[in-house]
Image (cartoon, rainbow, N blue to C red):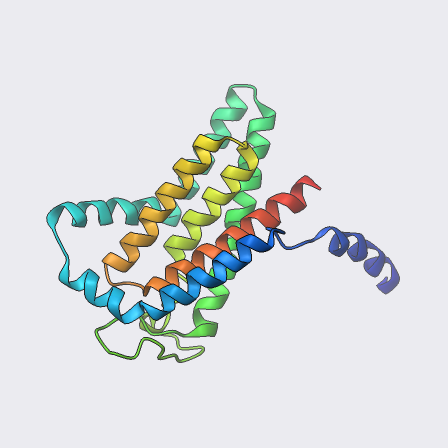
Length: 211
């Protein structure tokens, strides 16, 4: 049994490669995360001091865009529509996106209590943490909304290959990420780090499914 299992797992692991492979992505991701981390307290103060009714409405829309139940409903509707229209390939694309979303959600659910970062509350220390803290106030990283939005955006971009869909998806995800900082739910580095993890998770999952 052990030999059979090892033979089955070996080709699976051999095909599993972390994406994106481009070094430029990871260099830019590291630079962006470092910049966001340096601006965490300032970002909190800026969001607190610059609030308008129009921005409040945009933030509410961003919050809805990144809510899991809304994204799941959209994926389910897309899959059903593709099946009813007789487009099995499109339906398969939706399933790939759903798989990437699911794995991203698993990663987010595991990392939140593991990291235990405190949410913004006006304190000057942006790096307070309590690993395995049960209270939601210690679940700042990663941002579930940002993870959801960027995972779906990256998976849709890879599955479709359409530039306009990639731009629309990433644009919507950026609004979601901004809304979480504007609503004082997350630090800037939370959403930037979440975007990096989400994109890597989605692209790795989609590439593996294609292989």
